Image (cartoon, rainbow, N blue to C red; front, side, top):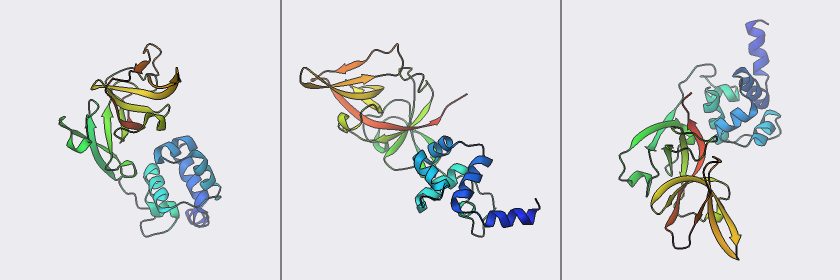
Length: 219
């Protein structure tokens, strides 16, 4: 196919067709792209089939994940085929779970760059130093955490949360169960060797944040 014919064919593409082509050119599965853009895979599938329309925020997130200008994704604009660098924002990076707002924690902060659509002022990054969540998460992984101090544990069932128990940091899945007609908070790791922790009624316990994404892993 000649270059001119290729240009004409791509100009006639729908948004969904262009999205699917860019994804397959980068050898991404729908799961890969949906995870990178932080959207639902079913919604991504509907976009590729032109069954749903993408809002500006979704277009921006997909363009960042695909490493193309937004104009390339929508098929218009003066920077249509001009390569542009990924835009990142920096978030506080902690080596242990902060006991307070990330911006005001007394811990010496590092900063970690995340893609711009992942950044929010109520998020921080956490470097893992424990193996209780293996094989899901490993020591030295860096995860993105949504700061949600004192969220009701019943509202985050099964979620991996950054918790403080007796002011000691731990990363576990939070569950609330009924035992003897009482609500009991149980913290579980994915590592079979990590026993569950039952939080006692008089035990100091807070959820500092909910893990929403793995953002870095050394290979």
